[in-house]
Length: 544
Image (tube, rainbow, N blue to C red; front, side, top):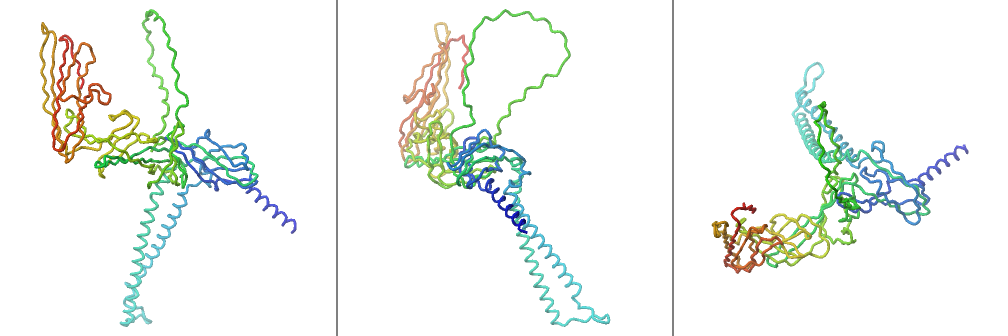
């Protein structure tokens, strides 16, 4: 008996020691995530007990890049070698999807509802049998039926009515409950089926270590698939000539693991891009050898063309990119990339669902213009020129609002060439219906000139009028395309009334811009006359 007790105590001690020496990922969590375009760096943390000799991070996504693994720990924990194992999820029961438990629970509730409904159907059938087969009274001894008394009939009817009513009401309640449960189950099953291929395999990282005291172990790795893209909202206050720029980020991921309550950082860096640029190829010159006579090819049997080399597999669009209330986001410029750190913890499910994060806003003074190109369309548009705000504003889609009303979408890119002055960009906020634009019919005249009529002269006249029907004055900008000669044999002479402010608008030669104030109720006239001369023996190529 004493030996048996000693054996049991030793077994318990060994089991306790084994649990202290090895731990798994049940105590690890995702602490922070840095999202790039198409990839993300995930950092998991775990507490290791004093005396631990190993730790296993299991159930990691198969999209993990093993070459990106980094392991760090507190000073009290020394880290040794590690190994990476990829296996089917079926052989790792601890890695079952969290959806499986929720789905099983809902299926159990539906089964319980169906069982209760079946029981009520039996009750209903029994009550119908009693009401139909025994309503006339029970068979009395001697084969004669004894008629029930009026009191018995009344009591029986009341019992049947109350029981039937309760059964029908309960059946209706159960039907509603079953519909609600099936409605809740349907998206969970669809989500589990959708990510089944992604979750088919899992990765585990086993680390040998020596923990002198309890400490923290950190594992970071990159996963393919997550991404973010900037999005903006520009609201124009025409009365104050200001534009409120609100920047947002659309974040989505389908890496195979949910990011629940994590510290999220968005980065403009691109870890997946090339790390070295292409080098120039040698430039050699030689004398071309004389052509060699070619012999007639001998007849050969037709052969099938060799199969083309397989094209390199393009990265899936799902890996590229796919985004809450207002809060202040800290922006850090690291020289080669800019990071936006979200101060509060965020949850991003691994379902491709877009989560929208607000990255702050900026109110900027705007220069308002009413721009029109009458030769193209007789419509004027309201344009706001905004100086580049401080900080980093990556290019992205922008929703445009004018005095609180949505007018459309555009693109905000402070780094792209713009019609606005250097260091700013222009945003168009839709049509200005209180500005009337008219273009007169073009006037063209072609004649022969020169001593012998050897040259052709062509005169073209364009005239426009713009009326301001606003109650206040506006700054009007009228654009016109003038001919530009690209050959010295073609001469172009242009005359304008009035003289334009720019002859190369938006750094484009030939794009003429008139810009002037236009008072309320006033009308402005603009005209351009172009004379084109060229030799009669050349054919003019005109593109417009």
